[in-house]
Every structure is written in C-alpha cells, then in structure tokens.
Image (cartoon, rainbow, N blue to C red; front, side, top):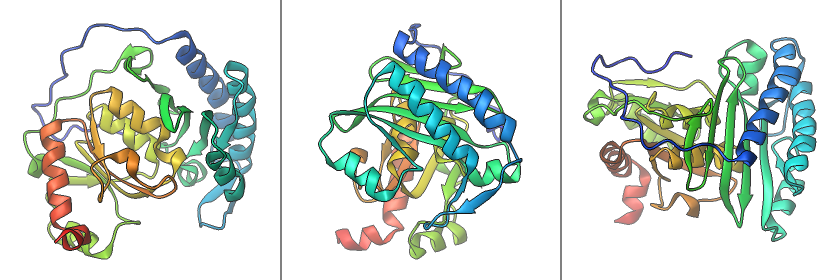
Length: 290
C-alpha cells in the first residue's frame, strides 16, 4: 500500500545514533522472513478459507504458518507460544497460568486481505515477559518490509534504525488510520459527520497499522478493540520508535483489557495529545467522566 504522501512538506527525521539489532532479534526476523517466503507467498490468493466463530477468516496457510513459526521460535527460546489460531480456552489458559515468558503469534494478520488479493497483511511475532512485550517483529512479505523492535534498543526497518516522517503541523492536516467497526456509535457518528483530520484510511491489518504509524505513514491511529496478538508486537514497535499510545478510556495503554483493547496512537507527541483530546471529548467516555 502507498505510504502517506498527502503533504508536500513531509521531511525525514534526522537519524538518531546508530544501533544494531541484537542476535536474538536478528534470528526472529530471519525465521519470520523464511516462513513468509516458504509458507505464505506460495499460497497467496490460492487457499480455501472458512469463518471462525467471531466472524474472522482462517485458511490452511494460517494454521501451517502458526505450526512452523512455533517450531522456529521455540528453537530460539523454548517457551510456550500463544497463537491466534488456538482455541479461546487455550489462549486464556496460557495467559492466565502465570507464565513469565511466552511468544505471541499472529501467523497472518489480515487474512481477509490475503484471501482476496489485497497486498496488506503480515506475520506478527512478539516475545512477552512478565506481561510486557520485549521483542517484536512484523513482516510484510509482499513489500518485504521487516519492522523489528527490542525494549530499550529502538525500532528497525529491514535492519536499519527506523527514520519516521515528521508529523503534520496539526490534526486538521493529518492522515488518519481509523477502524470504525468496533467503536461506539456516538464516536463513529462524530467521525463521519465532523472528521477532525484531512483524510482517512484503514486496510485491515492491525500489526501493519502500528508499523505504518511508527514510520509516520499514518499521522494518527484509532482502533476500537484489539486482541493481544494484534498489538503485542506493533505497540512495542511504535513505542521504541518514540511514539505515543493510550486507549479510549485509559491513559496507560498497558492497563486495557488483554483481549479487547482500544487504541489511540500517534508518532508525534503534540499531535497525539490533540488527537486524544478530540476523541475523549466526542465519545461516551466524556459523559462517563462528568
């Protein structure tokens, strides 16, 4: 998908001091790239699909990728793997049994796009320790872009420290990524009738949405409800890129529900504050806080 080129005065941020990826992060990126090449792209637009109980799609490729990824990741660190294609009971049991470290995997984020030939889907992998992501990789096998982050070491795109585009000057000039599906009706109505931004997009792969926000391709981001595998890697990638995030009803993003967490985010601090303020003023949460 094309990057944000709405504004002619967008400039690349000055690169910070160079850092390199750790050996572990490099190993994860290599594993994910290999899985993308061998297990995903040969089946692009060629696999049958079915719908799960929550209405989302699942293909044979999702299941195969999760199985192969599990083996490769456990060869790097032999800890349990929580995957999107596991049953809800299995997912909740893994999260709730007090494990200190686990992998979190979304084998194909954007399965509907994958099935219908829309080139906006990714593999998402995070290593979670004590409930927080410490390593994250999101790989787009079509664009061959690997976003990777490690706690305290920054964010990388294809092995090079990520250099995001500078933000637009204010919210009315922003390109927004907004997923309307899980938002409350009042806020949806306000966004449709009185959008505070210049233009709006959403292509249906949350992990890439986080990465595009980290890269400054989207100026602001809003999602009404993500599950653990939707945000585990992407939120760390944005955080390590210097971005900002919260939920619609909590300033601390990490305090949201594990299985249903709203997202308000932006790379630039001032733009994030303006975006959060507008959303809080125009949602039902504003009424609850009165």
